[in-house]
Length: 174
Image (cartoon, rainbow, N blue to C red; front, top):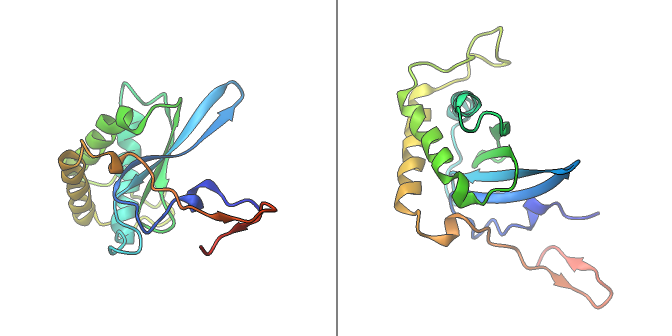
C-alpha cells in the first residue's frame, strides 16, 4: 500500500506555516490542498477542540465571502490531529501567493462578534464553540505569520527520507 503524501512529511521538523499538501488534477483543472499549520506536531499542545470548531466556522465563512477568492474556495476544515487546517482551492498557487488571504482570514477572527452557523439547525454540535479562545489562537498565528514571512521553512515542507532496498521496498520506521 502506498504511503499517502501527508505521511511523507517529517512531522518532527514541521513548523507552523502554509504548505502545499498535494495537487490533484480534476478533469483539466488543478485543485491544491494547503496545510495551514498552527502548531508544531508532537511538540506543542494541540488546538482546543471548541476553539478549532469556532475557527472552522468563522474562517470558512470569511473565505466563502471574500470577493476575490470565494469562487476559488472548495473546502476549509480541521486536521484530525488538531494542529491545523486544510484549505482546498482551485488552481495551483504557491503558499506565498495565498499568504495574504490566510493572514486576512486569521485576522478577521478578531472582529467576529459571534460564531456563524452556531445554531442547532446549522451545526452538528452547536454548543461546542469557544469564540474567545478562537480569537486567541487566530491572533497568535497571525503574529507568527507576520514575524516569519521571510523564512522559507514556513512555506516548504520538511520531507521524511525513507530508506529503499535494492528491490524497491521502503522502510517506514527509518
